[in-house]
Amino acid sequence: MKFQNWQMQKIIESFWLFINLCLTDEAVKGMWRVVLCKFCLVSDSICEKIDFSDESIDCLQLVIDNFFITWVDFVGCDGVTNYIHMLGSAQCLFSLENGETCPIMPIKGGSTATVP
Image 1 (cartoon, helix red, strand yellow):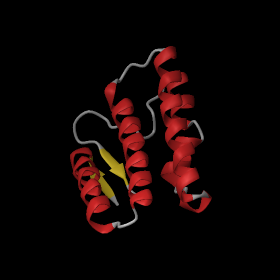
Image 2 (tube, helix red, strand yellow):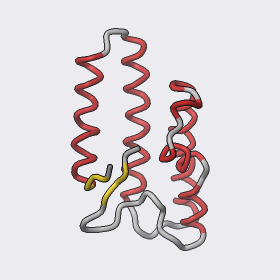
Image 3 (cartoon, one colour):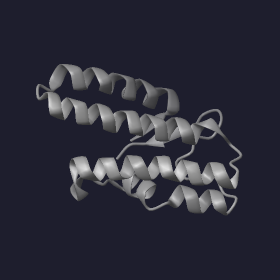
Image 4 (cartoon, helix red, strand yellow):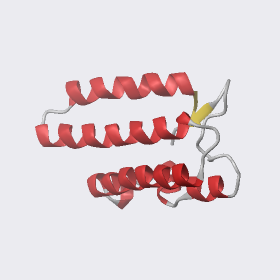
């Protein structure tokens, strides 16, 4: 499925409600909140800039790595979708260092995101 960025933002906002309404185990709720916070940080960091310096590329990759490690610790390797794998494999870092656009970076205007 493909969604416009504004639609993805609405989905993520709704996910907070899902966590609160549908999960009963407080530990699981807490972990989902941590994962979602880290995902939002990745998303915000990627959308923040179009021109990345070498230092900001390294910082972005640290944010992505932090999310990826947390995700795998929480859901295991079976929870690593293509999108999550692309984040964890440093594809954004490689693309940005080579002067290309990050493969998951939204493009100004009618950008879309693919949800596995």
